[in-house]
Length: 542
Image 1 (cartoon, rainbow, N blue to C red):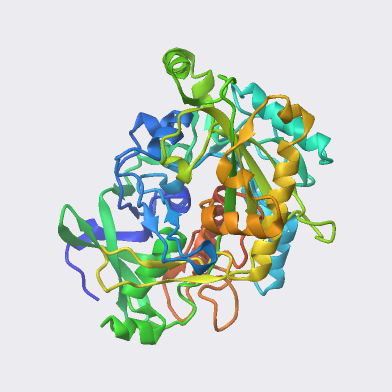
Image 2: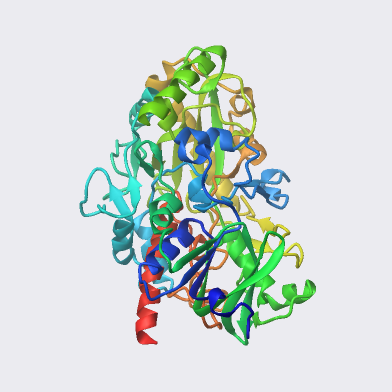
């Protein structure tokens, strides 16, 4: 297909999406000065102080800044018919610029299962070098951790003293203390390491992209919403996008790399005629390739939060006169030394545990939050207190991404099918009880906090299940909608190439065959690091 614009719009690789994976791809590929690389990002530059100050996370939930897609799900039967909230980063760095900065990789068994499902090269031992390549862990390098990589990983600079109290309570409840959830074993309780550098957020944009922006062979298009992958037959040859209301195009001499995330990567494939043929025809989209798995197998970690009111404990974040006065000093301290309370990621401590002794490995994760958290932080809550999340790490429920219309500016239909499998709810009930048991241990009980009425009234399993259905939602880890595998229901192969297409790969969390047991940002960066090697090998073979 002949595209207008001459050589200026001709690149070797076009990367769609400047998030966690896209920043890695653009930076790594442009290290080769013989390659021209384009990166398209619908959002803008990551300039807001709310992004760079870790505690700005709390204000971003309420902010009107255009850095979040603020998607909603379809009504969820498993959540009492409610629509769920699906925040996704709309800015350079993507969701790594708006997330809680927790650095977790998952369990060895996650990746071994990927490989066993027909994806050679994705076992734990084979992906560990890519985690290490990405990482600069301030604790130093060892068998599990890297040093010298772009992504800075560190212990919290100024942790809240009550986060350690949570760890003590978990130990009192029978969990082992675990100083490294990414080491030899994940199970236990401890403090999370975070993607910070010098008291600031270290997003994928800051880690990878910012140092590369001066390269003459890298062009970053911000405010550029991809509308369609351009194809010649079954070969991807470019991308059409909207910038300032004008339709523009870029051509890809080698490959188009789709890194728009688990929600928008399948959407863009379908808008481009690649997906379930009947659905595409329903929306008047010409079928380039009937690929039924596109948008299927969406899944996520269902999560519910218990909130505790602790009015006497001013060390917890909260809205009060004394809290406002402390915030003034905290702002000054962060500006002067990048230390103090504003270096918090709020979810400072946590645990990995089993819903029952019969579980072969941890299937629950806790995040202890040093503030009262309601409605994803969007609801203003007076006073001080703390919260604890419990999420199910290996849900059986599967949902889908589908098109609402052929309009590329319309949000897709997002249906995670939360708690669609009865076993998911049963194990989350057990998880809630285990969380309540930890919060009731002497270390935390001594703080005198009281459970908010909504959950306090839920004492038996049926009432807890009803509370979960009325309050659970995502913990922001959608995956699987462009699943990797060799089967007819899969979307990409083990080299992330879209089945039945040429010059087109998907590189983001959507390719995960099964969600990992933990936060998904570090695994997404790993996927992109491995993809760079796959691309380099393909170029040598060409």
